[in-house]
Length: 482
Image (tube, rainbow, N blue to C red; front, top):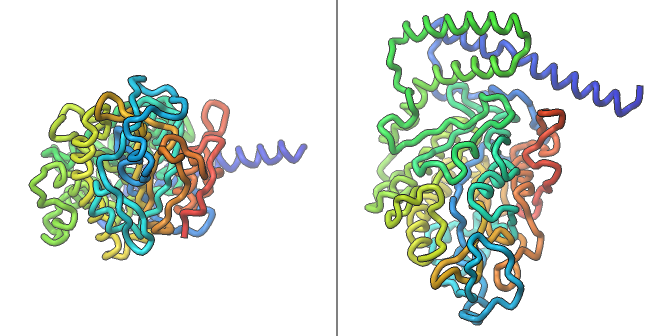
């Protein structure tokens, strides 16, 4: 037998062994619940990791993904370009690639000034006065790129590494590889007060991974933030129903043998039962001090700021309880409440639109960073701030900017990141990445690295091939790591 064939057989045998060894876990746990065991709301210890993947020291335990849907302009936020002021109103001196609407105008200077902040002298736009005070905690990647010009494709690409539906999201991959550290809460939660970005909830899906790894969506703006979380029936009636389901599932497993679909359904029943006690207590933030709520902007007269502040506070409470991956969504702008899926998308009215959105997220995100530091959670929580692409340095119409996937900024904080760092660069117009050109695959490879996972080892076989979050690409950006 050749060495290659032997390795393949060994790999397949290990994969089958891992899958089969997990079968029955859900039934065992469900049986425990049916016997009347009460869930411990702060129970810790990794569970539901079907593909144990930690291969190196872990710097971060959890990820908070602040997704800025719509496309934030880098040249107006974290990537200052003095040449835009010098050449304002002039034609672009380089060829302009295809844009979303191809209504391309002349160079447009940023309406906002940049100032240096912190010991690092990190330049941050006056759009973000509170985040600017945390400049020494940020690692700004100024050379991010995307393959997508359009929102839905861009949203899928940054979430899954593919520009079409049907692939697992980053949160699903991380739950698959590492599980949750709280048996009463899912490993992947989306705080969806802003609704789903363009492309729909598929960007949070499990794709071909077992269904247990899809996101649990919580909308704290609703009377019932998680649908059906409040029991309609008594505990005894629920136990009778679940006991019947358990019997049917045991019978199905005895007929099918190892079956991920059945096992995922069992695990979901178990988690849902436990969440009835854990989630209401989690969402009850009145036990937080008034000072903490002010820190997050929850007392702001701007309701969008208060709502996003609540999301940030809930994100802290979730990672504090062991949830692996939490994503936050932006709310619509008050001047355009119908634009829920892409509120940072200003093809016109850039100054007013970006100002509204910055006001929504600035204080809450800065408050999140400060609160995590105060509680000793900052170094074990990795914050990712990103949109699906950036915006052009030239105008669309009189006062807008079109989509720009060729060079934009994202930033990381906490979780072993080297704060006060600017990595990569765009050209002097902020149009194309030209130094340390980075991709979504590099971003997620770096996040997984900090979680103690080799991104090349986190795989799942579907349709005859092994898939990864980073596809066949991805390099860890060591320059942004401490």
